[in-house]
Image 1 (cartoon, rainbow, N blue to C red):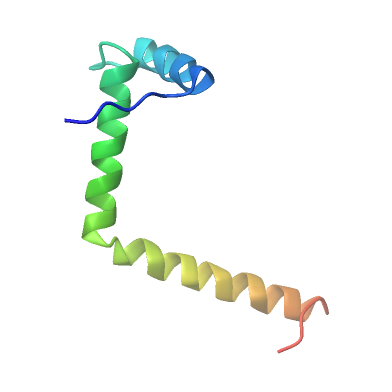
Image 2 (cartoon, rainbow, N blue to C red):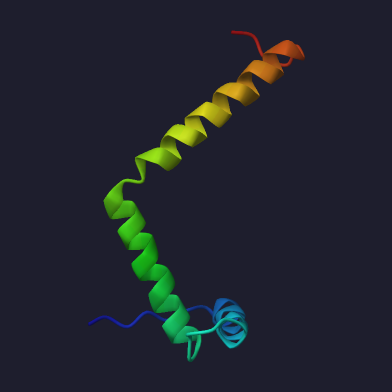
Length: 72
């Protein structure tokens, strides 16, 4: 198992969050949860999120075109 060292400012933030959230004993528990959740999301591919981002981009591009800031 590898050890990951968080920068002091991030460790402090995680410590505060761990105190506020139920289920986390300390910053290390919270960091492990975040890393595991992120890895699972990446492994899933989270296609639905990507499709939503693409649709949002299209809406923004259309609006910028309407305002004259973008030409297609």
